[in-house]
Amino acid sequence: MEELDKLRGEIDRLDSQLVRVLEQRLGLVEEVLKIKRREGLPIYHPQREQEVVAKVAELVENKAYEKTIGEIYLEIMKASKRLQSAQLVPFNIVLMGFMGTGKTSIGKYLSQLMEMELVDIDELLVSRMNMSINKIFEIYGEEYFRGLETTAIEEVSQRSNLIISCGGGVVLNPRNIEALRETGRVIWLKAQPETLYQRLQEDDSRPLLKNNLTISYINALLTERWAKYEAAADFTVDTDTSSIEEISKMIIHRLTKD
Ligand code: S3P
Image 1 (cartoon, helix red, strand yellow):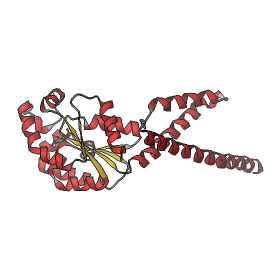
Image 2 (spheres, protein in one colour):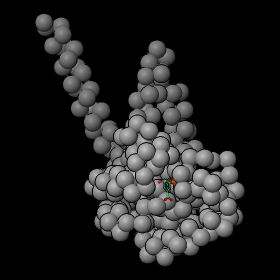
Image 3 (spheres, protein in one colour):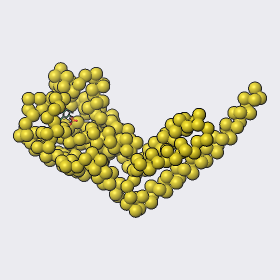
Image 4 (spheres, protein in one colour):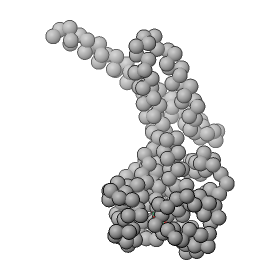
């Protein structure tokens, strides 16, 4: 049909214009990133993103398209962020530390902020086995769980641009650390036994702490693992008194300062 071909031709022409414009836009995003790094400015700026999306909504003349263009813009912002993060952090970000140090919460926050995929090893095992960590320990025992954990870590470590949140016992097998360090920077999230005790009080999802939830038990297990965490870590962040936002900011600063 001649009419259809004509319209398709028009669309092709607009697409080539759009591609040029997108290339220019991404180029500018890279320039902005360079300046931010040079000047030591914060890289991620959720407020600025919201402003851009709001400004774009105002530019839309045909209001019937406002929602759709808003959605497209959100995707453009996300894709730009992914590009920035891949350039800034060309390795996996590995969060390691004792139970209750905030690995999962910080992983979720960083994942949203940096638009990087989060893989939580415990959650992966729960979905693979279709049962809770407690149940895996109860039915198959700890050794079996550790085997599953190592298999998952070895698989996940082969991927890139991830935030990997590990279970607290990841340091017990040197194979895990070797795999994680090959493609990632390992961050040790630290906290005092008293802090961990407070944070873990209402939680019964940790089989190792069932009937063992005391400061002295936490202290003993932490002491036993201390040297292993220390040896595995590229750097350490204390989590006792800082918020998730503050800890995430410290992590990004450390990861991007070289
Ligand atoms: C464990 C920590 C848990 C989970 C399992 C064993 C450990 O993960 O993998 O209960 O040995 O420290 P979290 O640290 O995410 O709670």
